[in-house]
Image 1 (tube, rainbow, N blue to C red):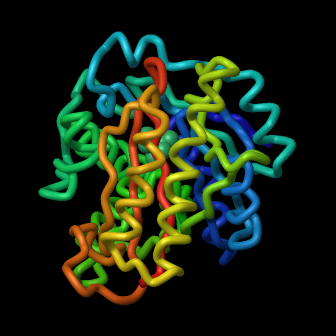
Image 2 (cartoon, rainbow, N blue to C red):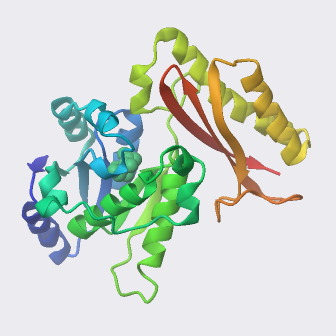
Image 3 (cartoon, helix red, strand yellow):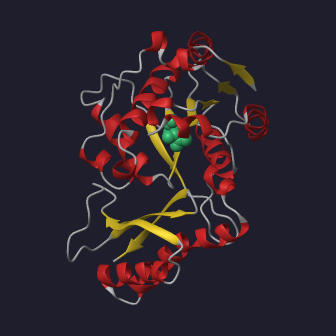
Length: 287
Ligand code: PAF
């Protein structure tokens, strides 16, 4: 695996690859690499000849500078894990390489869907996230980019951004690929944040996936959206230490709340805080 830190070095490797007609797949990360990220690399390897990963803790997507400072950084271990997983090129930019001359201008706005759910809890987060993803796309020029399904709202907004940037086919199309949520043996969705949970908090964190499972069962029993919603929220009532932030059923095509009588696959999205760790999860439910 080649490790580079500058835009120019990425451009050199990518342009050589593309000139020879080969495809490039990209897995952007903020580090703290776990099995979930490695599964995205696995998908990228199947798609393309050159797999590029990046590790960049993006200051623009943090709502407080303390959060940004405290974000875990483990560059050496991350690089080893990504190399072992088969990444060809690892981009480890400095802040100045991504935002030259201290220009932290927001270049992408997430719109209305960026202001609800995760966006309401973390104002400005999605504008900052889209700004860095757009900048990374401009640098890496991938044919494919792979993102995890666990961050459903992020994935929705990235797809929307890419579609919006290519209305006339002017920009090279980037195919956004969704990697399934990877869970531990008990069902907890893998996340870098899980490292901050104690043993008992890890038990409480299961409330999220259990609520999704109960909702799915209720839907199968024919309870419709109200039944699914009630079953999921009952799981939280029984575990009040997992503090529910939101629980909603949205249409995956629009991220808008589903309407009465909805049929098909809805996405149940959930966020809760355990201790001081904010966790999210989601699952498709068929009505
Ligand atoms: O999901 C993440 O790790 C980040 O939001 C991303 C997409 C790498 C942008 O910083």
